Length: 103
Ligand code: SF4
Image (tube, rainbow, N blue to C red; front, side):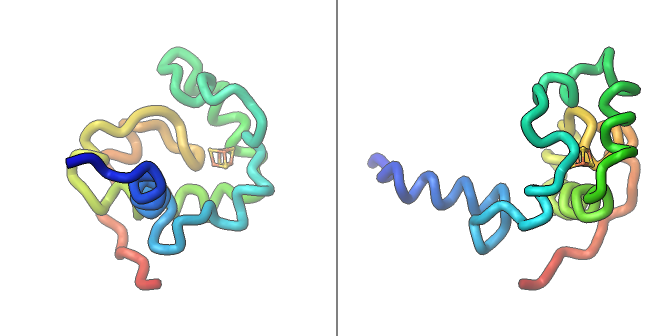
């Protein structure tokens, strides 16, 4: 059985961005917007990625959303990659679970 593309897309957006399926408003102000995402995924450039995050006006909601998203599934946390919200993957892995948002 195949899944219609629009259903698969909606499901993916829901997984990524929650029940609304839309990127949160704060992403419009992200310091990394338009930058090469490879910088944030490169284990050899963690310090450079963190420098960008330190100057980011939306670091707090970015970090909170990422920690909440990763806390929903053990596998997401276990296989976390890159720098998000100013935290490297190994730092996010060892943070306590955050409460899931109720929306
Ligand atoms: S905190 Fe870092 S990863 Fe998050 S939006 Fe800002 S620059 Fe991007």
